[in-house]
Length: 524
Image (cartoon, rainbow, N blue to C red):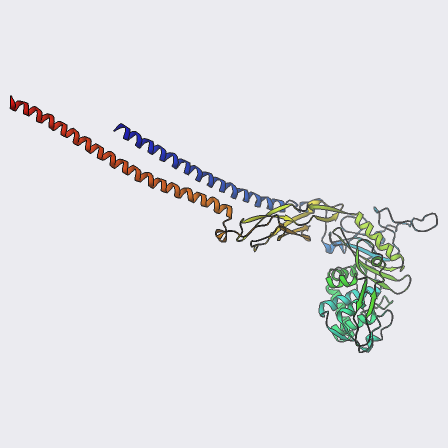
């Protein structure tokens, strides 16, 4: 009897131990899952904190920065986040330093603006949204053939590149530089654009204007309306070619032309054609193939950083130039007017030297930096780290605070497995003073294979294994409990039978003793 009770106690203790182990495993799983979720939340919170790391407080308190509109209207005599207006500040233009032979020395002191041959000039930085330096930027000047940048821009915006244009008599008879078009010649818009921007063909520009508006008077009105919409307040065009030296009828300013160049060089087609060194034009109904070659010295000599531009000329000392410069992420535009045709190239390079010396490059983040996690649909893993595809360097004035810079991550919501390492899964945007200045791809740090069936409801393979293991443990525990229950019932039945047999035996012995006692009395 005592042995049976002891066995029953040991069985209960064994069952309780198994249940305790099972509950311990469940608690560990729940705790681990909670830590994982908490860690994810912390990472997301960290991303938000990182995105707000650069505040605008300095923008509002440390210095009095103005909007781009103010930069283009107010003029100061110091470099202070606005633009430097050399002649109009009241300061004298720096004297040219001469060498022993009487030739100008190379420009080396980039702490001061260069001495310019051009009577009017400006250099603008797209990265910072400001004019770094300007000279007589509000003075009316003749733009000469730089005018053709606006002509080409309007044509690109309004005409398909493969459209055929039949050259009119007026276009074919244009004077000055031409691409030698013939009346009745059929030429595509694209070929006319190359002729306009590479050869500075007046006939090509005239043909484009007629193709856009039907007649030249209407196109000139469109040019002036477009310039006005760009914010040009001191500009008037009397033709589409720039073939005019009369500043009273065909004029602009360095500030206004900068507004036009911003839009023109931002157009991929215009920027590409204006930077082409050589173009083979297909034959037409009048001529065989033509070869067009650029005469832009900065492009032909492949001066580092200069990517496209447009020249203008009306005489040896009446030359103009507009150039786009891009290097190491720095994006500049230069305009020059009324310069010597040879000195304008040096002026342009010196302005770029001055600008690059007065703008600092800030490494915002390196290549491969983990920015956050992106969800992966149907993947073996439901999330993957998103890292920066390239390093990001942005530019701000040397007098500005790096706190003007802030970043914002945009994770794609349609990333579906399988994905490969390096696949683009988001964007990382860089802002300077609330203006978007750069955008870098976010890529997957590793490949993710397609997951098992539970992945379609957002469960990763690892979670499926853990869940499956827990479920298996539960099933084993349940089976064990049932088996133990069956065994315990069998043991209880056996114990009951044993007790019944024991009682029966005792009853029989009792009855036998009583019978024996009565039988003795009977015989006596």
